[in-house]
Length: 179
Image 1 (tube, helix red, strand yellow):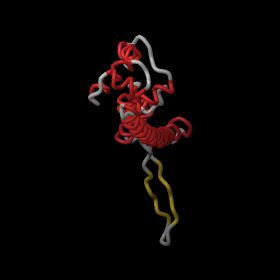
Image 2 (tube, rainbow, N blue to C red):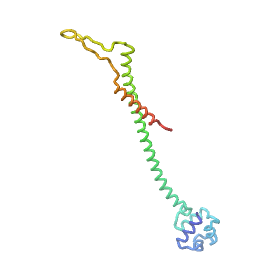
Image 3 (cartoon, helix red, strand yellow):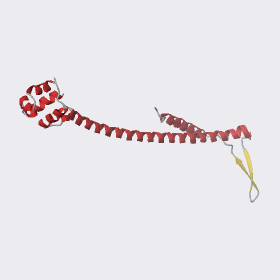
């Protein structure tokens, strides 16, 4: 890489090996060996060589073109990494919110279902009250009889509640954090 850069930069400056050697106070064979890759200039000579060829040592060593491309790529990569990190944080916040909503719906639906069945259980199993009850309430003109209907399980409420529980559990499972 260094040997090719020396040769290319020397030719682009319109210098012969002999002319470059004179400017660097070395013999022509030294420049020839550098260009053939048989030897390399020491650090001090590398600085002089870069000055004579109007370039930087990094460019002479072949690092500038790669470094510029790499630095652009590094900048783009850093921006992408930042965007990915922000996107991941946003997704994590959305996941947690969805999970919390699913848990809340599951708990509320379970409570509704429990209350619905508990009222039925309390009436038919625990109390063993008759199917219908008559309550007598005192009124201003005399006692009034009121027919109190027995509590029943509302099938629509039960079906909707079970559906919400299933969807909530599904939402809880889908929003589970995966390692």
